[in-house]
Amino acid sequence: MAASPNGKSIYPLDEFYEQSGLPLPSIASIPGAEVPEPYRSLLVHSRDMTPTLECAYSSTIHLRVLQRSIARGVLSRGVVLIPDGGVKPVAFGVIKINLEHFPKPAKELVLEGREPLGAILSRHAIEHASRPDTYICVQADPLIRKALDLAETCVLYGRRNVIADAARRTLAHVVEILPPSNGFA
Image (cartoon, rainbow, N blue to C red; front, side, top):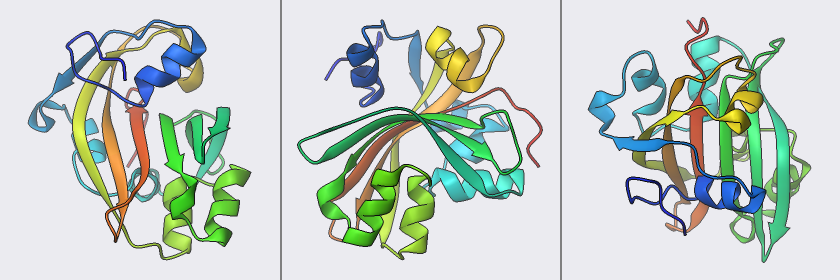
């Protein structure tokens, strides 16, 4: 795993950039207590991002896959989350999903790439826990700006999260980055 400029791994974001042939943007780890509002309420907790954003935007959240690959039973993808009826993304994410730990119907939905992982976990009542372990501030580079439909460079906030099932098997590693506040409730 590559490390961010401050020496801390930001897997799977670092791997996503490496595979894209791009340098990592400027990223710094920050304590959860230093994540400014309104981002703190959206990031600093142990809930899934999908239902958190659905509550914040009072809307169903949809998935748009930007890039995907599968190797050795692991689905890797770059995605954006978009509220129902919305145009602007409300999150950019890079996720590695361990397909072997999903029951067949849920695995098929994950592979379809139409729904966010959090929605699939909820619909199939897959017992799991989200364990955010790093909060970040990141300078939006061209890749992130394009994904989030941002006109200019700005500082964004995000988190690295590990999602594990009831047997403590890792279902997914994800880095979630939010755009500048744009009117969530």
